[in-house]
Length: 205
Ligand code: ADP
Ligand code: NI
Image (cartoon, helix red, strand yellow):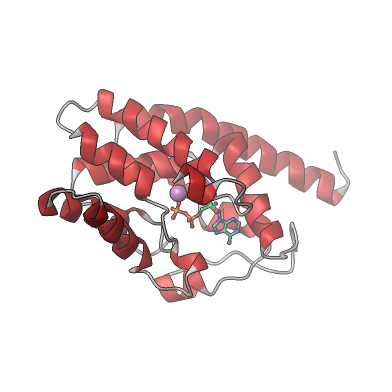
């Protein structure tokens, strides 16, 4: 994963994967019922082939993870568990339920979402928006609570909308107490950022 994603510029780089891996491991230490091998493997492989960069193909990630694990001679039971987590982990729109079927999936989803908020989350959002050629903000474009994955996928809104459409809601969607604690201060930082951004934008700071 480090070789594959070194120098990637859209916010899905090796440094993101490494942070998610380390955070998932940290959360797993606070959840003794979680299998650390499954948690760490899924965290490392969760962005192996993101749908956003594979023509919207939502099965590209699970498939790529399965193929790689098979090439390493991993047991089919382990492959199935990791593949399921990768399928479950991604955000699919504010109004779309993202259920997790295992504690390991909950930990990886929490770790991935923690990396989307706070200072790094802000930086990643604008890096992604820049990568897509989107404006920072446009007060004429209202945020949308996407009710389907298709609508979320087709979204081309200015980057600040992404805070209302996803990032400011992630705190409430953490599964584990350990993740909720980290999310609380990252969320507060992000709220202060948005308030300052809007004050500067309006020229009344
Ligand atoms: P997840 O990790 O839940 O699958 P994504 O892959 O959708 O989330 O997002 C990865 C990163 O890209 C996150 O930091 C996210 O905030 C950012 N991102 C995704 N979509 C947008 C968007 N429309 N505008 C700005 N940033 C985005
Ligand atoms: Ni990710």
